[in-house]
Amino acid sequence: MELLAHLVGAFAIAALLIHVGTSLSAAWRCRRSAAPRTLPELRQRPAVTIIRPVCGLDAYEEATLRSTFELDYAQLEILLCCASAQDPVVPLVQRLIAEHPHVEARLLIGDDRVSENPKLNNVIKGWRAASHGWIVITDSNVLLPRDYIDRLFEAWKPGTGLVSAPPIGAQPENLWAELECAFLNGYQARWQFTADSLGLGFAQGKTLFWRRIDLERAGGIHALGAELAEDAASTKVVREQGLRVRLVDGAFPQPLGVRALPSVWSRQLRWARLRRATFPLIYSLEILSGLCAPLACCVLAAWWLELPEVLTALLFVAIWLGSEYGLTATAGWPLSWRSPLLWLLRDLMLPVLWLQSWLGNGLRWRGNDMSVAGTASNTLSDWLRRA
Image 1 (cartoon, rainbow, N blue to C red):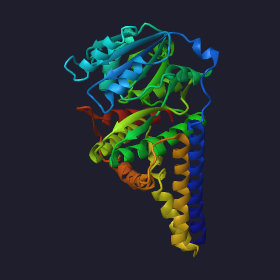
Image 2: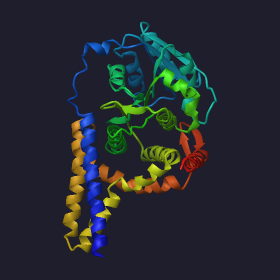
Image 3: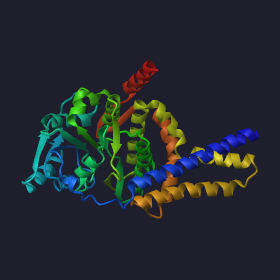
Image 4: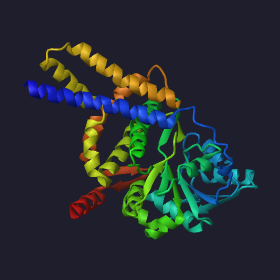
C-alpha cells in the first residue's frame, strides 16, 4: 500500500511540475515585453495573398475584417471568400472594400463542394485565385495586428512547412466569455506553445501561413480535405514532408464579446471530437491534463501517507492556479477576480468533455451537421497499418 501511495503521489507531483513548466514555457513565448519589430529586413518581404473565409456576423466582425485592410505590408492581396451571396456578412465586406480603394481586395462568392469541411469548400476558390506564392488563410473572427504578416515571416525558420497561431480569447463581455478564455488561453494555447517549443508544433485553423509550393507538392489545397479538420490535415501534410509546423510568439486575439454557456460547451465538444478523431492516441491522454486527476491523486497519497489532506490539497491547488495566473498576467490575457474560479470550473468540465467526446461522433458548425465517424476509423486504421 505504501508503494502505491508513493506512485500516486509521484504522479501528482509530476503533473504539477508539468503544469508549472508548461505555464512558464508559454509565458516566455507570450510575454508582453516582446522586442519591437523594427528591423530593416522585416520590410524586405515577398508578396503575400491573405484569404479570409467569411460566414455570418460574429461579435466584432467589422473590427476584425477591417483589421485586414489596415495591415502594414506593401505587397498584399486580400481575398474574402463567402459561400453565398445572401450571407449577411456580404454587405459589410463590400462596404469595407469600397472604403479602401487603395487596397487590392476582392470578394469571391461560391461554394465548391470538394470535402465535408464547409470552411475548406469556401476557401478553395481563394486558393485558386491567389496571385502570390505565399498564402495565409485566417479566420474572419481573428483581430490582425498591423505587423501580422511580418510576425508570420519571423516565425518561418529553416525546415518550416507551415506557420500557425492559436486563437487567444480577448474582450470577454460576460461570465461565459471569460470561461471560453479559460479554455482558449490557459489550457489550449498553453499546451500548443509548449508543444511547439519542444519541436512538436501543430496547426490551428485560425491562421495557416503556407508557402504555396509546399502544399502543391502534397497534392494542393484538396489535400486538406483528407481530414474533417483542415488544421489536422495541414499538420499531417507538413510532417509527412519532413517539415515542421511553427507557432507565432504571442499569437493573435479573437474578440469574444458575449457568449452563452451552451455555445461554449458545443464549441469545445466539437474541437474535442475532432482531436479524438484525428489524433486518437494523443487525445486519449487528455483526461490527465487538467487539475482533477492530479488533485485526486494528491489527496489520496496524502491520506495514505497520513499527511494533512486539506492543507496538502490547498497547497497543490494554490501552486496550480498560481502558475496559470502568472502565465495569464505575463501574456496580458484577460484577467479578473473570477478567473481562478473559472479555471477551476474549466478543469472540472474537462473530464466530462473528454468522456462525452467518446460517446458520439456528431458535431455542428455554423449550421452544418457533420460526423467524425469515418475520420476516426480511417485514422485508427492508418495508425495500425504503420505500426
